[in-house]
Amino acid sequence: MEPVKFSLPDKLPKYPKFKKEIRRAPARDLTLSKYEIKIALKNALRYIPKNLHPGIAPEFSDELKTRGRIYG
Image (tube, rainbow, N blue to C red; front, side):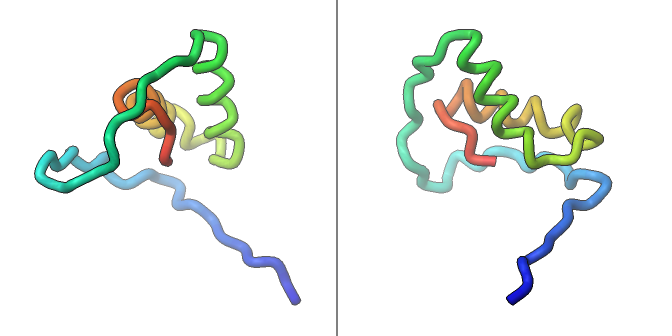
């Protein structure tokens, strides 16, 4: 059995607008220290190609600050 391979595009799609009318799980509190936030972002980015980091890091940071988790 061969491992599943996938790749990300060289360019990220446009960031979608948040739709308030869609039901979601309640936002969680952000209880991490600045150091822990840095580690969380670093961990979330480790499987993303480095050339995509400038575009996706702000999205991950926003998710962490507004929803309490990085859902990616």
